[in-house]
Image 1 (spheres, rainbow, N blue to C red):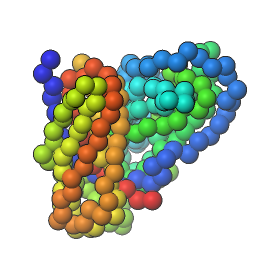
Image 2: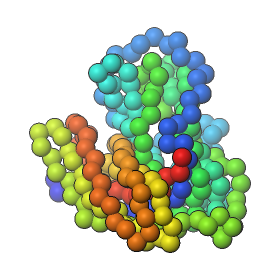
Image 3: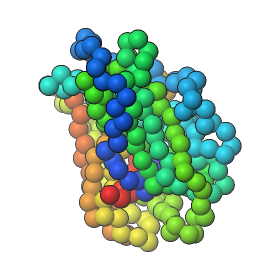
Image 4: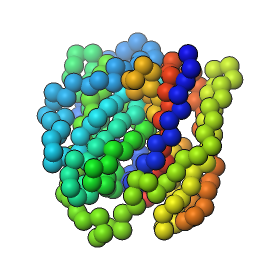
Length: 246
């Protein structure tokens, strides 16, 4: 099957790349070690997820794969597309991941905090999160934010300020390697940027992952490289670059 490579020009500042753990209950029995690919069409039925209105940051698509490392600890490789439905910048949006066990009970939550999203923007983020000691049977996603603000007051970087070019995908045996370059078209130096890779199959998100580059100054271009083992079957890849603030 012919694969499509999509280069998405996405830029927004984010903070706290490693999500903040909120352990609710973590004494669940261990489940069978497997590699699970989630159907990305989440049912937005929980309390967190009812944010999809004209005054919100809504989730347009999401999906993930759960993998177990050599220590038998599960990690979720997720990708998510968010939209700011406000007429102003959404300040401090937070992606909330709720991990459920085989009884449908939430045993842990993690949060990925972002800095802001431009009004009307659709942004892509992908990441890797620790699932705790239990392999989740489901992960629910939601998004919340603190307040809105004026773009000019925040010296915000627009979504078109970073450009991904010269992207290649090469596979050898079970290793897939992505390479390319990031151009900084903004008027600001960027100390760190995260490159997000969204993996899709038949229009569904099946996995997400990322890597980082350092010292991306205004007008400059830097190369990136990312590789993953045993990618799920896919026919589309979306790559975007996001400025990162610690």
